[in-house]
Amino acid sequence: MFPANLLTGHLFEEDWGYLKKDTLQLIVSCGIGNWGPDLRVGSRSEIVEIIITFNETKL
Image (cartoon, rainbow, N blue to C red):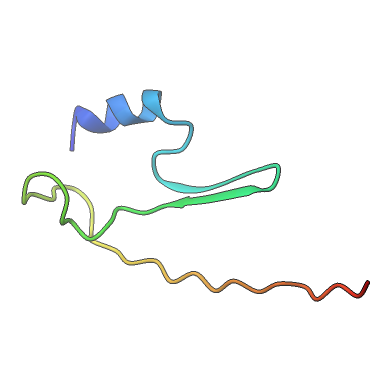
């Protein structure tokens, strides 16, 4: 919610979306709205489904 979104944009490298940095992969969503005040303005609640697969390595 404005102006807090301006603050988080400056505090964090990624405050919403996907970031890949070396071996780190970061996903930040809008969330489900259960933190802070019971108020959500300008965004939809979302739950992200992440499917993780690993490559099998043979030694």
